[in-house]
Length: 136
Image (cartoon, rainbow, N blue to C red; front, top):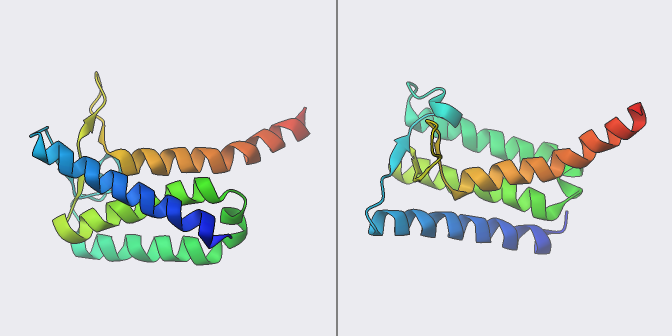
């Protein structure tokens, strides 16, 4: 993994996410606080414990799956940047601040969530596409 490609993406995602949350607060946009993980799963657990578990999970993913993350530093940077940005929220707010509301749904999210989703999509798409080619 080339840290000179990975870390600028991580830092950019963290900055953009935290700055967007600051702007949402500054312009008095509606912000919801999600103390759980995606779709408020595990929201009834102790926020400090959940933060610890998520930090451990990100650490283990980063260290134990380097070959997987090596394939695309940009996608990996999006994923880890989004994960770390949401962990910052958990540390300082005991919840993740969501300010993007998807119309006609109950989905609330933030830029970090989108970075995680896009990063995973970019990493998994070639794997799925290669397997599909082999099946044809």
